[in-house]
Image (cartoon, rainbow, N blue to C red; front, side, top):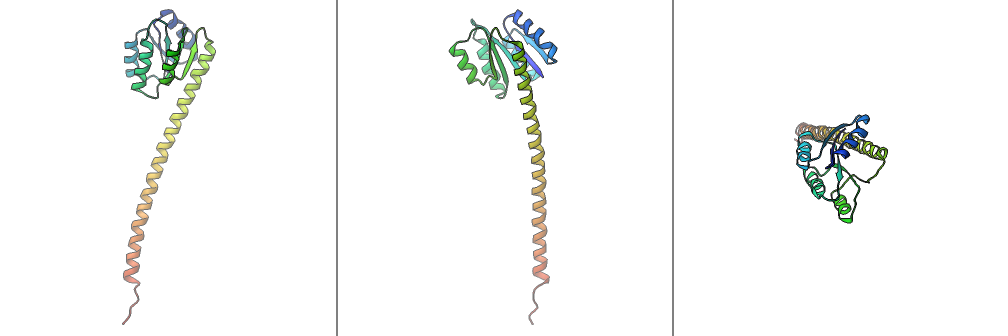
Length: 166
């Protein structure tokens, strides 16, 4: 799973990388919101971890921009400073999970694995729906063929099996 980590604090980025690299997830990190948006557009991450600080509002703006790009984007928000505005904004922008610092990295990894399974399940369902659509198309074609043959049969029946009254 490809994960983009965005934080304005280099130490936080380092902590995330050190903690998540052993899990086998593909990790890319940045401390710049513009770079984060460009990376997301170019690389199509399945998950974004956003470390929200107290002084800046760019993180919430980034969350909103990510949501505009992809309404199904999974974003996990981590912050040491939660206020009602941040919580409401996170909820309104469909954050997948919220963590308050300090937090347990095992719980974060469990959440990431849960999100990964959800994505895999949704992809499996989409794949099955595509296959189902193909099967439905085949059924409609078979039905159209049957209707065409049935009409031909009726014409033949009407023309050749009419009673001959003389």
